[in-house]
Length: 72
Image 1: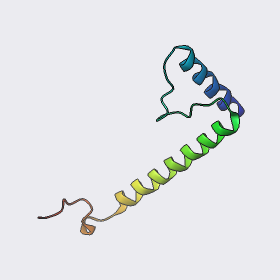
Image 2: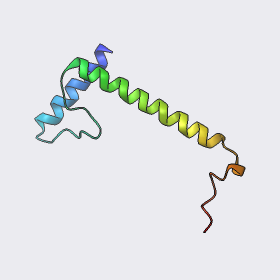
Image 3: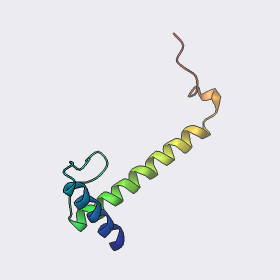
């Protein structure tokens, strides 16, 4: 994890040095290792939830009506 945090800090510094704003929709704009580690954990949790939802939707049968558009 320490290496990931160091690479992340390097990337944030490079973005800032280029004069561009850090895209906060993709990154957390901080150099604090604790906040970066929390951001990694939150991102992993979000990815896990999305994967579970996609797996659940893919497993649903067509009889559930999930793949059918609503009828007027």
